[in-house]
Image (cartoon, rainbow, N blue to C red):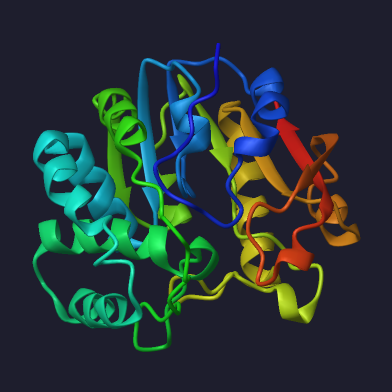
Length: 270
């Protein structure tokens, strides 16, 4: 089966290692993702139902709009993908509108526009919660019409929620499997993208997540699959799991030269 791409560009997206993930992701009735990101794993699986969460309210709002109003959304979004809209002044103006608007539908439209026109497709906010990624200067940004329709169709089986991982995992049922893709432990001080939505996800938070996962697995036998970079700290964190090692390439980096091969780790509690 041909792999489906997300309609978003996304740092840390799992499209490049999907085959490795799908080989070991356990079968259950419901897939839960506390860090859904662009949704590549969701799009390429066929569970009976999904609970998909993220702390980024703009992302979850966009997903809910695409799920419920995809025909209107595609018609309205495509006008943002013309030569006139691919200019710095238009981008800057709509970034400001996005940061000040309270209209969920308008914010969803502009979020897609920003994602496809900003530098490297990054999603980054300042301490005020304002999207602050600069203009990308691409020749002709791609309008993901096919991908939007595919996402909306599959999303009819999903519930999207803006919540932290501990809230998402609080009331999961025994017929579920959980895939966790937390912000990666950085390879260096300059590669830290973990603050993409205001709150930083530091090593202490990683330890809290692992403690919660191991507690749920031990007491309720609910399987978990976690992805992260293969570094000493992650091997230490997930030492009680079955570890799988895969090679990948960064799909997004601050510079073209930073998009190098990286070693990734998959930790399975099953």
